[in-house]
Image 1 (spheres, rainbow, N blue to C red):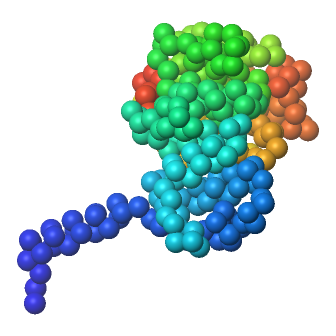
Image 2 (image 1 turned 90 degrees about the horizontal axis):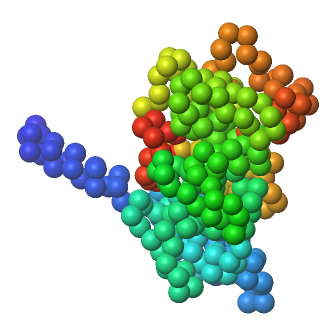
Amino acid sequence: AQATKSDTKAFTLSLVAMSSTPQEVIAPPQKDPTIMNPAASADHKAERFYGAARLCSAGGMVKFQDGSVWHEKQLYAKAIELNPSFAAAYHNLALALGEQQSISINGSDWDRKGLYMKAIEHDPSFAPAYVNLAGLMGPEDTVIVGGGPVLDRRALLLQAIQVDPRCAMAYMNLGILLPPHSVVKLPHGAMLSPTALMATARQLDPSLAPNPAPSAVPATPRKAMQIGIPTTPTSVIMTPQKLVMPSSPVAPRQVIVRQAPSLPSLLGSSGGVAAALKTPAQSASLASGLLSPRQ
């Protein structure tokens, strides 16, 4: 029999419903905390919950061998309960939360901004957390992390470059934030224009964005990614994806006007930072056009 329009519509709606159903993943033994030796340390258990959370697609769930089913946010929250200094878990939990959402952990309520700040407090070298925190802030907003100085979103992006000179998203978002004809001094002395900052970002990560017209401001913010263990993080403001937070501190990662120096001359042939620049994986937008990370 030939399908009617109403049949086709009903079928289409059922496909939409099916595609929006959270995916359930069976945790492999090495990511299943329910089969661990009862004498295992809290930190070891936290790593299992964290590893299981990273199996989830956005809003997904994981099933353990004991039959229990956990949502992504619950898994990250449990990892933090077991290890309150787990920076990557704070960061990825922030990415998993919606714009106005908060979550209770050990009796305290946390929103996305607070989680990013906590990630930085526990790992000051974690560039993606600086980038994603900057992505939540407005032009007049400031934060103080762990008793440090007052930071606005520009200072946060500069700090991301300081701790990871290959953090492409930090360069891109800084270039988007600055007025078109301004220059900014990077942590170790290089002076770059917004065009040069965005060119550097594209050289470090060609997938970030197409080359914009010199005077154009990228239209929509993007978001950094989620973090897992181990992998070199990529930060910024693009559509959330997962960052990978290494077990040991991550070794982090300018459109050039006319004869501006090339990326190799800025970073040095060994991959380090030359004298000129001795050091690049969900959300309120920065300025119209900022990228937002999911590392």
